[in-house]
Image 1 (spheres, rainbow, N blue to C red):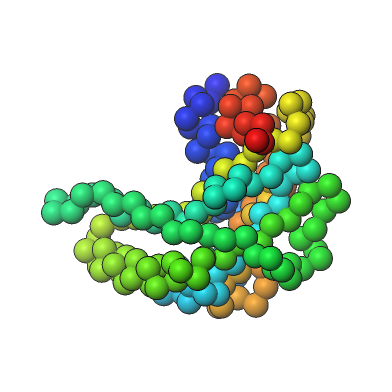
Image 2 (cartoon, rainbow, N blue to C red; image 1 turned 90 degrees about the vertical axis):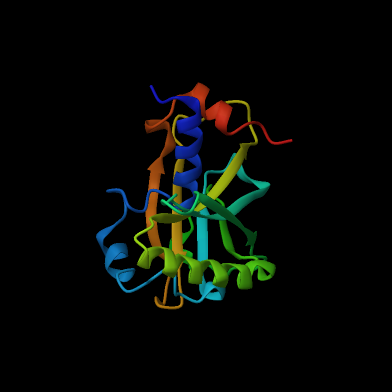
Length: 192
């Protein structure tokens, strides 16, 4: 059994691409991203698309890009949150669409682009100092219905200026294989 805090983190990570380093990332994606450095790519070109089943929706203000630096002998651990905004017309390719599964497009909010560039600079220094860190997108969702479906397929795609098209970080991963209905109800409450 997965403990609720871990499940909440897992659900958020699955919705946002945090499992990219796991075995669910297609080889073609790893190949496409081989020359992409998140600490030097143009932030205005970073795009994400999230496909979740009908019956769920992203919570308002529930999407953020989170950067973390590990603690070192001279520096404390540091976490920075950047706003991610839903695109009004993301122009997402038709191959990503599935019947009954809304598709949402996101980008770094304009007001956070400069702050993200500064974070990238700080991350390059941290990397040179062998100080670890991570960059992930966190997404909170809510449910439109009381009943938890027996299958909840989630997909996350990414696009950068270095690659011409979206690539799947993971596709059609079933949340119900990793969490019980009770855990899903806790981490994806009914929408208000």
